[in-house]
Image (cartoon, rainbow, N blue to C red):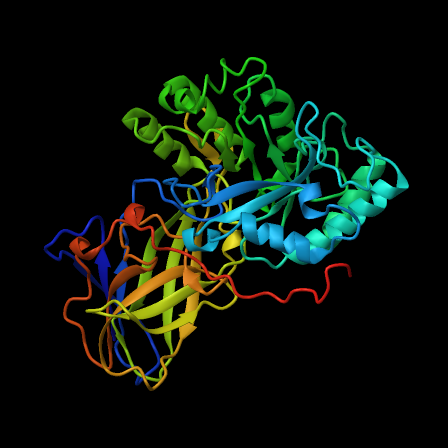
Length: 489
């Protein structure tokens, strides 16, 4: 018996080119000869606008070329004017502030604050300004955090949560967070957020908690040793909690690093390399402020593409193997290999879909999910080497296997085999592999497959692929939520 593999190496031109390798296989007597198609997609070299990573602009209208994350500041006295206000008001404020983000495939990172700077303070009218220690403050903080959890923990618009509340800009300084408040707030946020991850300004202060970080002076020359060293002391925390923040262009020696402004950071070779090295070294997932660059400047925009590729995850689909022909109602296997060449993992448990597409319309004819697959385990490398521009500990190639069976309603004929990562909010394609095999809408076509019929030419020409960088159609679905019956519960 022979097992025939049709292997594709390198780019596919308009003319279909492939090699056929044959190997002898000892199998049980009576089993049919199996032909499998082995595809090695070519990497997409450009940067991708992928969810839950990258540049984090202020705007949340989808106008930024890479922005899928947006930090949203919320004044406490907007959410609660007095103790009489309830959860309904918090939901109303969030719905107003986050309106239509799902249409642009954007998720928010909310932070509540009391003090901006100077005399810009936003305390509820029935609380004492600058009181961070009284019993009333503790009780109200506990209640607020519980309500935020009720509103945000299952809201698909929320990526993760910044603790905030105490200190200027909610940055846990001026004043800092006392040990008593660290425990009170650490316990409260842990209880309130079972599904969403929590980040804090100084996670090394919250020693008993597994929080991520928002370092709001990322790559600032005066903080790299202290804050970068603090991140490294967290060990492998970055594997399960996001490391992010923003660059700062308004204090100290910022002009030395990260540069005069976002444009300077991205167009100057020294500044850009310094930023990328910190992103790689500390496993940075996202940054704000530097996102406010000028996209009309070609040099700046080119630099932005380099930085976007370094941020967060970047999944390379190295191989994809599937049967050349599927028998209706009989089990078949799919195997693929994937590697994360980015700086951080993907921090959400999103499913991977396998599908058959109509060869003419590209519409989904059948789809199913890989069982027991957790893409959060697709970790990047570690131990960044600035000189070699590579991780000393290379990222692992993960082999994924799945067994599937077509229902009888899938008729005989030729289809396109495709794979996609879905956002659970609507189960639509969202996070994309960095490969050239792409169709507008988020699915990756790998090759033709026959259902009950042989396929003469399973390989796809690169001419049929769409450019993923030009696809702005991805979105997710915000389903209606149950609201409390009263505003003063």
